[in-house]
Image (cartoon, rainbow, N blue to C red; front, side, top):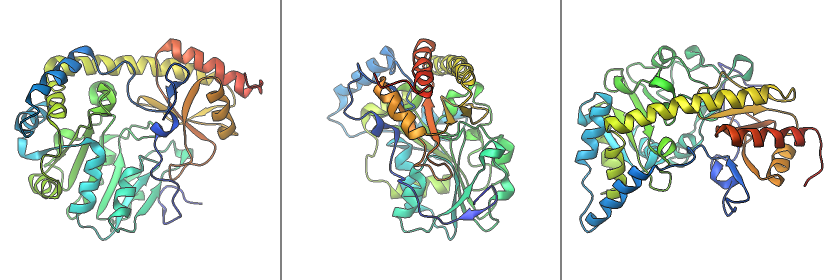
Length: 361
């Protein structure tokens, strides 16, 4: 069995299965979505208005300079350390194409797209599997010294664990590219443990951010990379022309204003309170073990017969994310998105009913 500190090359699960598959073609009126980690009730009206206003300029080719500057100011970095991308998923593909590595390693369990992109580029990818018994905590010593490309999430999807920035930074060294996926960092109050402001300072550090989760822009595809200028230039050369649409650029710029950042900070506090309510309801169910401590807008739970539980929840109108497609997990894991308290109460009642063995309604 692989634990922390063990690199394995095992047959992978379905790395291309994502939470949206749980709700595809479903009627939102009949199925409450706890499978996708996009914040409910988004995008806000003011952001929709900004995006709509950009449509008048669709005849012109996209010009990302203003949005790039806005992201740079937001993180206190020069614009040359910023690259706008069509979501964080594009950034993983660009890294796989542009960064040369002899021994790439992905720290799991985590979002599977970076490993899938590396494999598609022809790499044999090593895995460091963090251990549930250790709370899926990162031990820098678990990563092999000769790994020259390391990918880690913070906070990590699906575990919701927030690694100390010092532990993540300890992985940086000359000759190594350290990719830190911070797609959910803006859902953490104060963005504590973020390394975004150190891009270009720590050797080989590449930070990926997404605007799709907090702002509800998964369909628009907008994210960005923060890194040293040489790395940014290499990634930009691997991009096609005009990779980010004008509406997505308008959204990026709008989401970096002081008012938007204040709104995101308030949303992070609200998510933390809603997550605490969800955890309290789950703790009342003795069959459910929660990984953590959780810090993201989702929680990972372990319970016997998770596949049957998932089916029972779906019959009662709730979609949750299966965990067995994440390396390092298995069939007894489910991921639950944090929602408002009323939704959580309805979900907890349905889960208790399923666990008690009640018949399908």
